[in-house]
Image 1 (tube, helix red, strand yellow):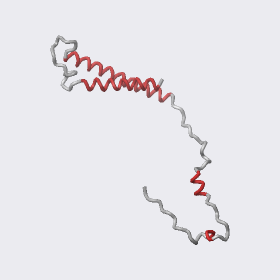
Image 2: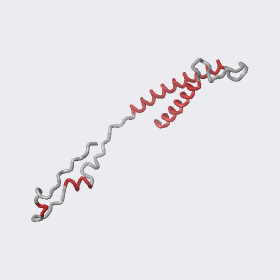
Image 3: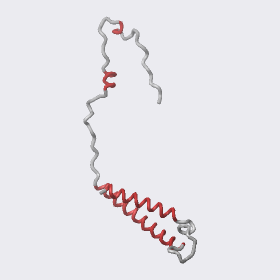
Image 4: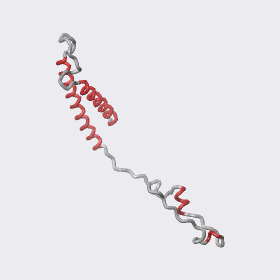
Length: 123
């Protein structure tokens, strides 16, 4: 239902944008300035566009309020996925549990042949 109303609202918004852009700022309405014997005179086009803008604007506002009420009423509590709480990424496991060298090897003494710890670059 909500997805349908969202699509209807999008169509109303596009129609509203179109009717607003077709109006002229001086009341010319569609830029028609021809004879009065035609289907839509300049005044008739301006009246039609003004009325359709008002109707589309009202529909847009009413539909926005209805959608906000639906979204507020159907809100569900936040669910947190706890399935990955006790698992670690493979790289993190290697960093946290290094292999210990056998006693008596040159690397057994941590003070000898140890490079300085790497300092990460600022990002």
